[in-house]
Length: 95
Image: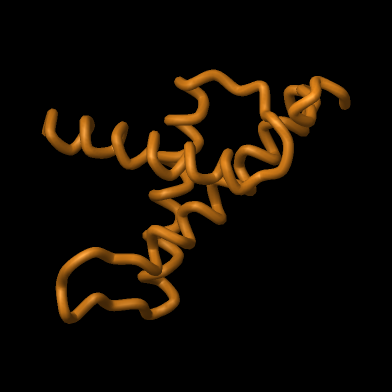
């Protein structure tokens, strides 16, 4: 049980971090929110992939659900930024 929770946090951090790197500009989001949105995105990516018929019969790393999870995390970060009203700034600090 505790291993599953720690695994979800680690995967959430990786997926959320990659999603933030893909999105343009600098997002003013904390680490905790990045992990939460990344974990939700990873869960949704896995769920949607398997509902659409993906099966990893060879074993190993499941790349398709991982990539779909990053896309979902990007969408969730965009929604979060839209709802909270936080602005995306570029590297020079301009909006």
